[in-house]
Length: 483
Image (cartoon, rainbow, N blue to C red; front, side, top):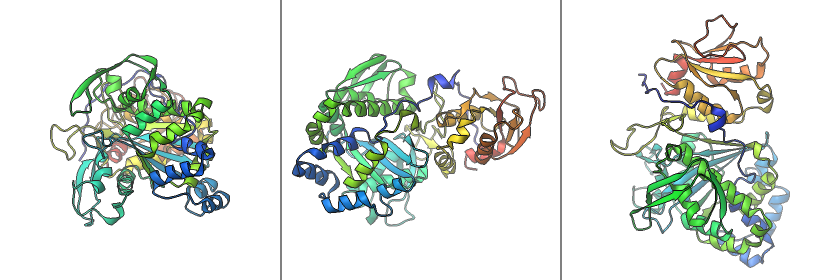
């Protein structure tokens, strides 16, 4: 049965407030990988100590050389060399300073597409509710927020955890499994960093410079004694120490709507990653490599090998900022238009802050993530595209689709509402000028392509009569809702 959603206010211009795709670091894992690679010039023992502490394995010099020259099939180096997509899961958790040390406050999927030399950074909100199947009985389902997946192997929160999620990397593998269900991605490796490592890393760099679009005032920021404290940051660019950078990254209860939204929080976290990378790649950053190793050694967990780290660094070290796509799964709010999530009770009980996938099968999210790397030739057509909502069963669908696809590089106009339409239709006002874009839109949305003129079919109020217009029908709304 269709679920109606209330109409939400939308932004006036997407190109101003939502585009995030042009200002992210070239080396994706930021300082975490960079620091490890550049410090190979330190003493062998010091470097081996770091690798052993973080991965559980000592360096095998012969093996690393062999992998660098002729990587084995399935390794990250091999996949990058042969044009295969590589996926890394980045996790930020509380650590022993936090009352919930294994909950992952920050979840980010990084997907590398070597065929088009682009990278996606996808932020996933910690409040997303999932139905986890991590127990020995495959039919056992545990409903909880996705940030709890990492803690399953290390606590008694549920019994009978499956053997593949045991051991030192069990939390990472459990998180990979659950995030993979939502996104459709199969992860090659994971990296988990706790708050102390994050804070100490920023301090070891001498702080970082971060710019905020609006002020950030949060009177309910968690302190280290199970209470709260106020934090205040002004709009504009400022220098942050480790604790301040952590506060900016973690804040969830800001007074400012733009900062309180999941979208705003994801943007801050990605901006801080950029700032860390920029600082670490300076001459002074290289000089501080020993301090950085010390900051990370005891508070980072990963199943990456040295050859994995070096392969990613070598591939991405010269990647331009324009090749990075920054996206986030979000729900609509008064401050920013959401996309594939919504806020209602989807299993955690009334009164619990929770986010839910509109399509509980996740098929729509999978399709979106799989389609994020649009062929550069298609984007090169620069076709003007507009979405209009003909689905009366799902108000605001035009806005949410525009929000979802804005980071991809398509040339999108502001969306508008439309009269009722049972079927999705792509109106071509260009006379066939944009064949690649038309083909992509039809593959993603379905529906037929109709040659249109400024008067036929009659346009909706505010609708453009040039380029391509996608009228989202009732059929697409059902797919959006997984029905």
